[in-house]
Image: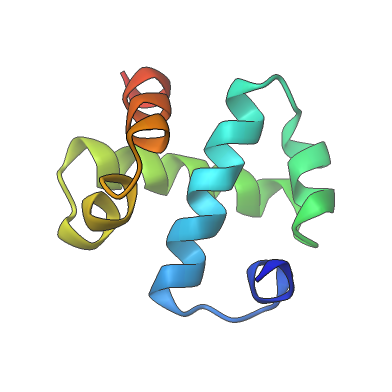
Length: 83
């Protein structure tokens, strides 16, 4: 649910979903400020979120990969974005 994604909820599944969407928007050319506005967060939070997503991807975080492996398009987008 979009409301959960933009809420202050820091449930791991929400954080991962936010991170995937932030990476998608960033790869589509959106600025950190624009993405922050979408998620009701400061741009620096988005910078951190994306950096953490790259780290989780590259270090094979089990929870993170469990979510991205559910969809081939998301898996490929993250592979392209984090490589």
